[in-house]
Length: 231
Image (tube, rainbow, N blue to C red; front, top):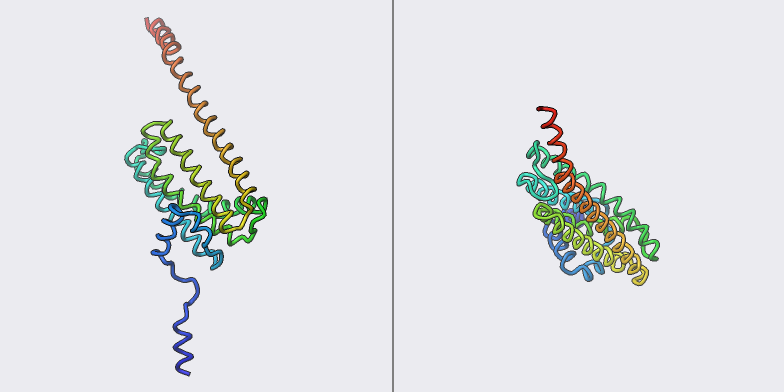
């Protein structure tokens, strides 16, 4: 009788606790050794764990964004509202992490279905949470945009490429999608993001040229007209 009570009390009471040491090790393995990590990643255990992972990634990313906003560097500057914008950016990253977890899971599920992989929603949510490890990395490197737009664009594209590498390993290693089909989908995604990046750079260059022309010619003419009116 007493043995039965002892055994029942020693059993884990569900997924109540979150192992931060395991979280740190898993995050490190995801970034440094994605092939072996995704091949052995568990696909069951409930939605709480991947949700907490996503929130932590969003919080860390938000801290970096908040820091860059205070220093007025990167994609988000302090502006006239200073640190207030930084606080809102932090909150935005938390919300984006939660929403992005499930939207990402749906997108991954669709890709997995196309590539003949698992369509179990929890498995796809867990892959989505794992891939989100790139979120704080991207936010940390956000300062590059404050140094140079082109440097920021190159680093952003590099981060996207690495995120697609993680996604590829998640699809083939965890969701057991067909490698050949997944590789083709990955190439298509790379091409899409590359075209988007080129379009963004081209648009910025044209806008810069327009502003240069406006400043050098039109502005001078406007100043002359104002002088004539004042005289």
